[in-house]
Amino acid sequence: MLDLKDIQSAYERISGVVHNTPFSYAPILSQMSGYEIYLKKENLQRTGAFKLRGAFNKIAALAEDGKCAGVVAASAGNHAQGVAFAAKHFGIEATIVMPESTPLTKVQGVRDLGAEVILYGGNYDEAYGYAVGYAAQTKRDFVHPFADTLVMAGQGTIALEMVEELPDLDLAIVPVGGGGLISGIATALKTIAPECRIIGVAAEGAPAMANSFAQKRPIDSTTVRTIADGIAVRDTSPETLFYLLQFVDEVQLVREDEIASAILFLLEKQKILVEGAGAVGVAALIHDKINMPKGSKIGIVLSGGNIDVTMLSLIIEKGLMKSARKMKLIVTLIDKPGSLMLFTELLKKGDANIVQIGYDRTSTDLKFGDAYVSVDLETKGAEHQEKIRQLLKEHGFHFSEEN
Image (cartoon, rainbow, N blue to C red; front, top):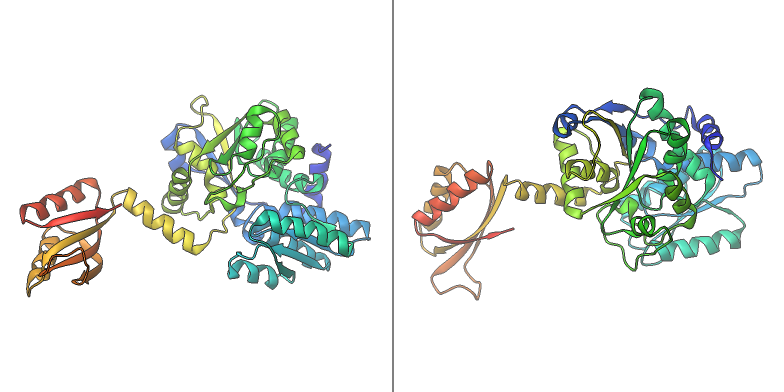
C-alpha cells in the first residue's frame, strides 16, 4: 500500500537531482475562468517530463539494496528517458524496449543517456510484453511505467511541492493515462489536505481509466488513438485504479481538438510548450469541464513538454485555420497572361498576405483554357476572411476552400 511516508521518502531520494519545478500563477487563465489558476510546470523537469521522479525513486531504491544487476523498461517516450537518466546516475545498465515505429529522435535521445535500445513490436503493448520477458531472462529488474509503488511514490512528490507553495489548494487537475501520476498525487493530497478535490483528465481516444473509474472495475480499451501519446494507455491497471477509486473525485474526458487548442493556447498565451498529455488539464479548464466555486485555487499539472516537432507544426497549422488566421483557397482562372496578376492584385486590395501559391493547368478536372491556383493566405479573423470571399465573388472568381 502506498502512503504518505513512501512519498516523503521518495522526496528525500530525488532531492538535489530532480528539479522542484515552478508552480506559477497563470493570470490569463485565471481571468478567463474566474478561478485562481496555478500551473505545475513539469515540462521544465530534467528530461522534460514528470516521469523522471518515479523512475529515479525506483532505481535509487534498487541501488540502495545493492543487488541490482540492471534495469529493463518498455517505453516510446518520457518513461524511457527517465529510466535511462536514473540508471546512468547510479551506474546501472539499462535496456529500453521501444516499438519499431518510435521516431529516431526519441531513440537517439535514450541512447544519448547511455541506455541500450531494443526496437521490438508494432506498438507499446508488444514492446512491453517483450521487455517483461527480457527482464526475466536476463535477471534484471523491470521498471514499470506506473503500476509500481516506488514509481507512484516518486510521482507523488509533485503534490508535496504543490501544497508547500499553496497550502490552501482547492482543486488539483491531473492527467490520467496509466494512473501512476494521479495515484501518487492523490495519495499525498488527500492525506495532507483532505478537503482538496482531485480531478483526473484523460483523452477521449484513450478512455480505459475513465471508463474503469466510472464503472468501478478495470475495463480495457480495444484501440487507442490520441495526440496525447503520454497518456495513450490501452489497458487499465488494477493497482492504480484502486487509488483512483479511493482518492480521486472525478475523471473527465477531453477531445482531440480540445487538446490541440490547449497546446496552442499555452504556447501563444502562456509562452509554455507542452505535449498532448501535458495539456489535457488546461483543455478541461478552457472547455468548461471544471465546476468549482468562482475564486477557487486550482493547480493544474503540466506533465511534460516532449512534443514531436512535426505534431506541433500540424497543431499550429490547424489552429491557425480554426481561428481564421489562415485561409486556403483553390481558385479557377482563365489560363492567359495577366490572369494571375489580376488575382494577386485583388488579394492585395483585400489586405491578405500570400504565404504559399501553386499553379496547375494540367488537372483532368479542368476545362481546356482554365487553370487552378491554390493559395494559402494569412488573414485577420473571420470578418477579414468574409471580406476576401465577397471581393472574389464580386470580380467573378470561382473558388473553393480547404478546411
